[in-house]
Amino acid sequence: AKAEGRNTVRFFDPSMQAAADRQIELERDLRDGIRRQRFELHCQPQFGVGGRLVGGEVLLRSRHAGLELVGPAEFIGLAESSGLIVPLGAMVLQETCRVLARWARDPKLACLTLAVNVSAQQLRQADFVERVLATLVETGAAPHRLCLELTESVFAEDVEDVIGKMHALRAHAVSFSLDDFGTGYSSLSYLKRFPLAELKIDRSFVKDLPGDANAGAIVDAILGLARTLKLQVVAEGVETEAQRDFLVAHGCGVLQGYLFGKPVAMEEFERVWGGAM
Ligand code: C2E
Ligand code: CA
Ligand code: CA
Ligand code: CA
Image (spheres, rainbow, N blue to C red):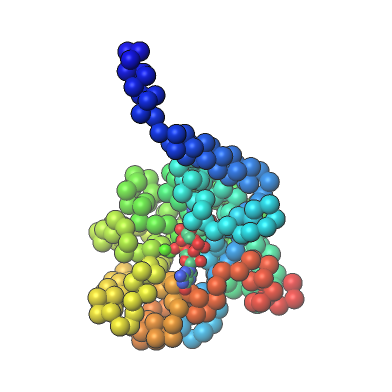
C-alpha cells in the first residue's frame, strides 16, 4: 500500500494542486463578494416591436476592488458548483424587487417589467416560493412586474415540484419565461405543462438571421409554437436591423440586443429611461 501511495505521489501533477488552490481562492472571493456586496445589477432594455420600452433583463456583474467589472461568465459556474448561487440569487432577487418598488413611483418606469435569471438550484430550494413572496412583501414590489427566467435545465429537475412552485407563484401574478429556448433539453410535451408566459429565443438562432435558412426555419417554428401555446416571445441578441426586420415580420413580440441597448448599470438605466424620481 505504501508503494502504491508513493506511486500516486509520483504521478501527482503539480498543476492540479495549483488548479485546486485557484478554485479555493475563487470560492473565497465569491463568498467575500457576497458579504461585501461587491455585486451590481445591470439591466438590458427590452422593446416591443413598435419601439416602446417594455422592460429589462437584470444581469449580474461583479466589481473587483472597485476596478474592473467582471461578467457572469467568470463566476456563475463557480457559484453553481459551490452552491453559492443560492445566496447570490436571493440577493439579486431582493435588489431587483427594491428597484421595482422604486420604479412604481416613477411614471415612466412604473409600467416596466424586470426579468431575473433564476438557476435550477435556487428553484430546488424547498422554500423557494415562500422566499420570493416574502421578498415581494418586504420590498413592496408589485408581483406582476416580476418575471423569473428559467432555463431548460429545469426539465431535468423534479418536474412536478417545479410545476407546483410555478403555479404557486403565478397565483400571485409572478410570471415565468423560458430562457435560451432551443438550446437544451427542449421537450415540447413539457413545454405545454409548464405555466410559462414567455419563451426567449436563444441568441445562437438569432445570430444567423436572416441569411441562414436553417436559423430562419427554427425561429419561424419557435414563433409558430409560441403562437399555438399563447406565449409571448422575446428574441435575444438582436444586433442588426436585418435580424430585427426578420423577427418583426415573423411575429416576434419583444426584442432585446445590442442593436437597441447593451446592459448598463441599473442607475444608468434609470437615468436614461426614467423621469424625475
Ligand atoms: P442570458 O440569461 O442568456 O443573458 C443574455 C446574455 O447575452 C447577457 O450576457 C447579455 O449581456 C448578452 N447579450 C445581450 N444582447 C446581446 C447581443 O446583442 N449580442 C451579444 N453578443 N450578447 C448579448 P451576460 O450579462 O454576460 O450574462 C451571461 C449569462 O450569465 C446569462 O445569460 C445568464 O445565464 C447568466 N446570468 C447573468 N446574471 C445572472 C443572475 O443574476 N443569476 C443567474 N443565475 N445567472 C445569471
Ligand atoms: Ca436570461
Ligand atoms: Ca438567454
Ligand atoms: Ca443565452
